Image: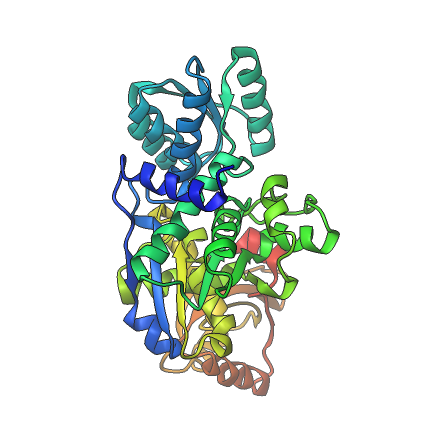
Amino acid sequence: MTSFTDKAHSAEHLMRTLFAATPLQRNDHLSGLYDADIWLKREDLSPVRSYKIRGALNAMAKVRARSPGTGVFVCASAGNHAQGVAFVCRHFDVQGVIFMPVTTPRQKIAKTRMFGGDNVEIRMVGDYFDDTLAEAKRYCSDAGGHFLSPFDDLDVIEGQASVAAEIVEQLRRAPDMIVLPVGGGGLSAGITQYLRDVAPQTDIRYVEPAGGASLRAALNAGQPVKIDHVDNFVDGAAVAQIGRMTFDVLKSVPSDHVLTAPEDRICATIIEMLNVEGVVLEPAGALSVDALKDLRDEIKGKTVVCVTSGGNFDFERLPEVKERSQRYAGVKKYFLLRLPQRPGALRDFLQLLGPDDNIARFEYMKKSARNFGSVLIGIESSSPQNFETLFSRLDDRGFVYSDITNDETVAEFIV
């Protein structure tokens, strides 16, 4: 019987028929910051800017070998899996039908169409992914096609394991630790199984977005469970329920080896990697780098590999990412100010601002029958400590205000 390691090596060889190994690069900035030997496995530099092409290629090749007469390949995806499937359909010159939610950004639709060309038909169905998935499976059954799961498929898991095979080969040894992003679990299951066989001494840490911690929920329950609410900001890893096949591999993972990354902090990491390193990462692609903040004490002096899983970042999201990064860092705040309706009141407030305090938003509603008006103010500053000084001045002058920066309900409507 062929071992999983052999299957992973076969998948790695298969990848070379389509693209070169993605780079494993030492990062001097992160290495200096954490006093460790930090390497990035740049899956964001694959032909589709994510590792998803690996699972799609391996699964499609194996299906075609087992069943040469297989007709259409079907998947449901709003992102990287769709692009990987499209690319591989064109490579094998087979037909694919890709179902996407109606709400999918045009950029992702255009890239999927570009990668697949005439070999792919895109169908926009449903406002929510669950509706899209149900329709894709219904169509697949009616058409007698093969459904390509983004993660819960043994062939896909083997394909993703080729990432680990490349890392060991490129580093010429196994790292002390590897940090993996987790969504549905295909990548983490493949790499975990490979390293258990080849390098059991390597520590593995898993990181999920705080708003989509499906692995942690499954470990707590002892089985895959659907979490009640998912924050879709980290769209490449925000999965409501981890796969059953992937959880079979990951069910023995110690719960304290699974980290959760706050979405706003991930934004800060995206901005840091873009500004300092010129590396464009999507939110899911930044997860492993972001987790280093929680691993600082564990990784000192060690060789650590972070898998940067994707770089399909829509730059229309950059203002939101910058905004959330600033709020996380404490250098931007929003508050409601109760301002007296008298001449000079606004001037009195403005004189309390420090030299590094910049007004980013100001909305004032004057009401003629009232003594006070409400003002929504957004302020950017160079340091969180500047807000302590500002609020102290406001208190001393008797201004009434409310800090709404972290009030998600209010921020959703007015920020």
